[in-house]
Structure formats: C-alpha cells, structure tokens
Amino acid sequence: MTSFEMEGLITNEEDGRVRLLPGYMFDPTDEVLVDFYLKRRVFFQPLPVQIIPYFDVFETEPWKLPGGDGKIFNERKCFFYNTMGRGLESLDMRVAGNGQWKIVEKGKDIHTPCNKEIIGKRNTLIFWEVQGAYARMTKWVMHEFRLVLIANPTQMSKWAVYRIFMKKNEIGYNGESSNGDRNT
Image (tube, rainbow, N blue to C red; front, side, top):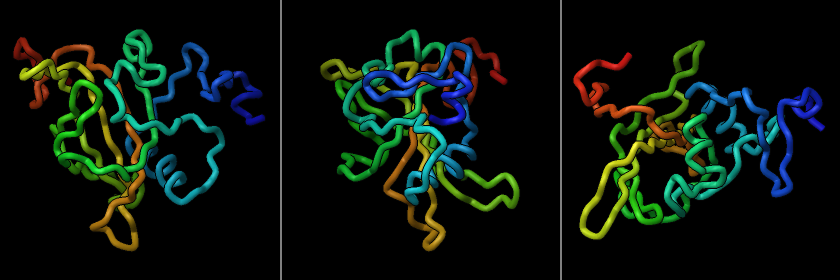
C-alpha cells in the first residue's frame, strides 16, 4: 500500500485503474510530466503510484477513451502513456476512430526548471470529427509530450505521455476567443 492509498487520496478500481477522490486534482506541469513521469517510464524506474495508465489514444475518439465520458473531461484532464511504435499515416495528422487529430503547434521545447536544459517537446493537437467528406473541428485538445534523448538530442524516445481535455470556450489558434477578446 502506498502512502497515497493510506492517506485516502486514491482508490484502486476492480479493473486496475486508479481513481482520485473528488476534489483531488492531478494536474502536473509540462516539466513535471516530462522530467518525472515520462522519464521514469522510459527508463523503467518505479513511480510511487501508477496514476497514468497505458492506452493507445489513437484507437478511438476522445469521448470514448477510458474514463472519457463528457462529465469527467469537463471537470479535469486525463493522462495516458503510449508508445509511438505503430506507423502514423502523417506526422501532422493522426487518425483516431471516426476522426483525426491534427497538429496545430509542433515541437514546443520543455525545459528543466533549474538549468533551462531542453528535456522534451510538446505537440498540441485538435480533434476533428470526420463525417463523410466533411470534417468538423471539436473542442478536444491533446498535448503530446516526448522525451529528448540526452545521448542524441535530435532523437526522441518512442514513449509519449498525453494530456487530453476539452476546451471550455471557443479559442482560435492565436489565443483569441470567437468574439475577438484575448484570453489570458
């Protein structure tokens, strides 16, 4: 039993998933996701609790992901590990169920907080629902984090961690809302 379980912050479900108690938010920064969680996963180091499950996020639409009913995603972000082992049709577009994730921001550097060394990269993707010949942009957003390998900084690890959530309002790619107000 971990200290998190003893303190009552998490419970283990019958299917092996970990559930946080209501009000307890798991919302790590980009740096913590890459430098702590992803780095430990890539180098097979133990984590105090397995709070991020492994799941192929490109198997289905975001609302069908484990724990992905709309209510949960409206309240919080969900996180998944995945490997980049399967062939991606395009690096800028990834098919998922009856839709596709399209990259809108590519290769944002993630730095360590102390020495500002680049430790990872983040891509931002938006889910487009495909219906016949038409595609409609949804409010679903995915942040894909990859670890930069120290031995060869031009290479990335096969492992990725994903943060998936639904935008609360309509925001354009330049950060402006649909009524022209700048979101801060």
